[in-house]
Image 1: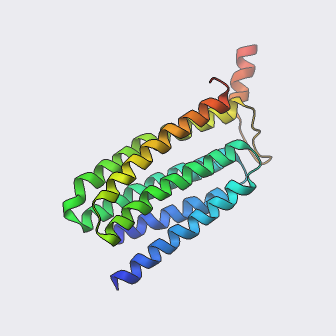
Image 2: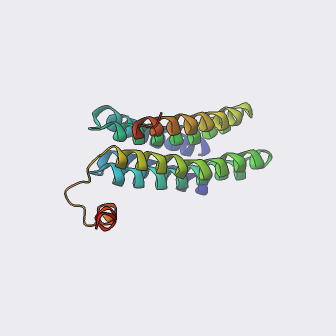
Length: 104
Length: 86
């Protein structure tokens, strides 16, 4: 029950970060990391509470753990290629440096 | 006692989904909306597992697994479309 509570708290923080952060890339960071961790802990916690369900819960958790970073990476790459700008307070943009180095 | 904790969990998840839904409605670009949908679907997978525990239905775990699979395929399709490679 405590493990499930940790997971639910992280899910809430991830959704809160989606609303609060200023930029697409920051939102991808909050949304993906927090919800992957939160879903893993929630599902494994339910599997520990109900011992007969443990292996199926572990299957769901591992599936989310594998596919969620892939889909968020695809969205980040697509939004970078379609020209979504970074926010004003960004410090470093390594893709721009890479493009200039390629051009030179 | 256990019921109270479960109700608190479900309330936290519902408030989180509402926050992401606000971002999905006001998001400036299409990428914001796609990210919000990604977060909502991953949250709903956890919500299905908690509901399976509440109602004691084993079949909801299968529903959750298929839902996460379809969300993954759909988001990859949206990303390919935004990249312009369809």
